[in-house]
Length: 219
Image (cartoon, rainbow, N blue to C red):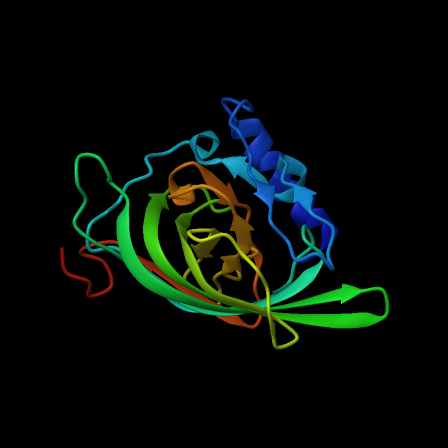
């Protein structure tokens, strides 16, 4: 993704932000990579700052594959995922199920470090905003099941989650590229309801975010 595009996206979030007081989790990175405090400059924003009407959207789904070099996190991300909204409850409107399998390639000095993360998805928010730069978003999180670096297990806290955001920009040849965010390990629970990671162009890659009643989906 070009730096100009990244700056444009970051500015869009900042303009729409209604509050910057939300607590941001610390990125729990492997010891070989410095830990980062996530900020809006890293493409992280409170979900409330995006505007529109986030919703669990029972029956909504997101799936696809992303492959891109992140301008925000300085790593290459390749991942496949499926996210299905399930029946919400009064106390948990964001219930979901699904799975994420991600490969992250980081350059540390002259060495490329390969990380593999497998996670279950248990939280998803679907957002449909009629603004091309934001558009149809799915924000998902869930507990890490396994995490390795160059084949060796990486210690992580029980219940630690990953968070990622994807954007569907259509299927036609004239449609802009779909977008996907970095896959970020975070602390806390059900992070999909409070934070999102700003998505970046993914080429190659194909993302589908489908709401009930659309594209053959049934309510």
